[in-house]
Amino acid sequence: MKLKYIVPAIIVYAISVGLYYWPEKEDVGVNPDYVLLKSKDDSRFISTHNLAERIIEQDPSLKLIDVRMIDEYEAYNIEGSLNIPFEEIINEPWEAEISEQGKDIIFYSTGDVFAEQAWNLCTQKGYNNLYILQGGLNEWFRTIILPEPPPDTAPSEAFDLYSFERAASIYFGGTPVGVQSTPNKKQKVVVRKKEKKAAEGGC
Image (tube, rainbow, N blue to C red; front, side, top):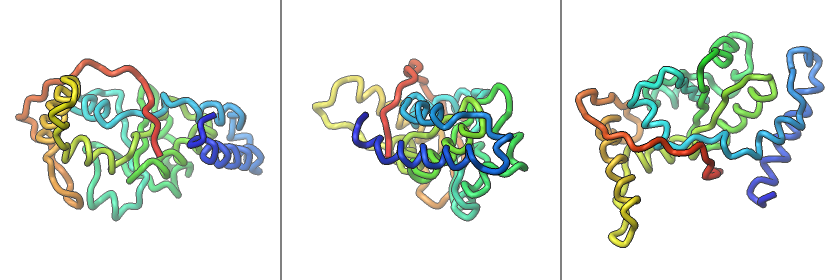
């Protein structure tokens, strides 16, 4: 196991065991070993580029859940996302939102930490089709809202990706942090070929 996964794996396992032996464990249908195995699968991450592409294409299977606090959500959020603070993520009122059939549930926060914890808890509860936005809003702003051009020596693929990022930035408003963006529906964005479900990792 890679070193960067050791500590998160220990935390995940501890949370999973705790939930498994919770007094109301009849509601918990997933073994902690299964959660631990899933937590080592990088396919649970979705890249900011893949997310932007799916939003632009108005993918009906997409469901974004912002697990930050309400004040952070109101200051800025990704278009179409629902706010469920991490502390409330497994509360009964939100069960219908997280278990909605035919939806890919994508958790995001500022970075990866709280989104990954939300993923862990909901996976332990038996919910399916759960994902984490890799790098969270930090990566969203770096690659989609305020992308920087690659160096002149970069391969052509990097410039193709940057062209997509620039167009996506215009689509999503390219607004500064703290201001909620409004997509520009008139902006035509050339969508790249769909990337493979792969994980780049993330912290």
